[in-house]
Image (cartoon, rainbow, N blue to C red):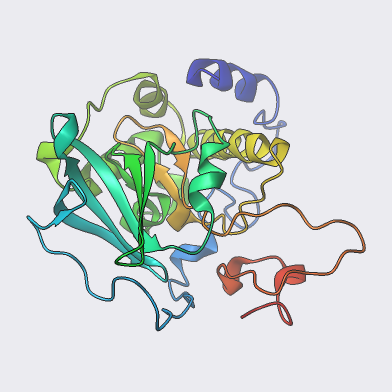
Length: 272
């Protein structure tokens, strides 16, 4: 949905504030999640058979991809900014993990404006690695944006503050994609409350798209939400995605995720 259409929808319906009500609510409900105040997260421990225990260095080649920088590290491996030699050295995100898991197949079933799409997947049995190639869109995670804004009270923030934080935290400027578009125009004129509500609406549409295809993400959190360089919010990281639990059915042996922000019904005894 075009951001301006969402803007009209939000203005006419869910974000209209009745006369006399405080738009921030009794607890300053402006979209600032508790993740900013409690930044500690229990990550899944790295397995002993992880295919890559140390990060590749700048200039290293992995199956036709040239590593430019490390973007992140998780329980399953590393995420790199890289160039794809065979396709005019286009910048891509290269996710290197073990051969286990079906994230590449999950992503292949999804095609939505607010889900980072998969470009290709390649298994390297000789090294025990799987390469998942994703488009590089610049930007940063919502978690990083909120950390940038933590010293500014929520009721003093605006959509412009989100854009300025986005530009400050966007690294590797020489490889950053074009950062213009309707999403940035929308954020530039909106309040912080409406900007956060719009981001939530975009993600709800993305999750609905996945649910229609029998996939539950299982780890929605600020660290798995990308605000691209052009201002568009996108959902990341489907490595835990699986079909929904049926009523009365047995729980899976392993869920993973982030315990601190998971729903109560996904805690022990299923936790690894």
